[in-house]
Image 1 (cartoon, helix red, strand yellow):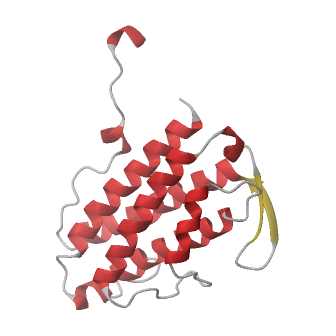
Image 2 (tube, rainbow, N blue to C red; image 1 turned 90 degrees about the horizontal axis):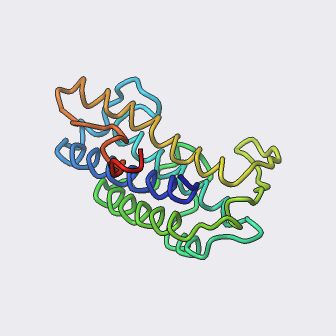
Length: 182
């Protein structure tokens, strides 16, 4: 499997899971969304906000690549966060709308990627201001892994609230291969 194929799969999984979680979250009242449940970033809304913030931070860093994917120009439609817990949208519906747009951007990004993009090294400053140089493909993998990490926390919170998220496995999006390819 090529890296591009892998990133296409992860972008589809990302969108699928975000849709599932936002569907459950949209059934909660504002107090339930904002209730501190002792998780990273406190509440369901806090975690959903953090995921959007972190994605935007990383995607804006990716714009600094020597050869950035052109789809990243669409980031000008989004706020540029500077803190990991920065509140981007106080209104849940606006947060949800931004998540949908960003998930579409991630799908477009994964479709645009080529070996030239993926073999680059990205120089950026982390949140502490330290200069980092890391392979872009690994940093993109990190973006998707970070999403999975916090979505796992959300599924736990929903389960504790008696809400069933259903199947969450990446396996559900991996196509079966014909028997002659085994």
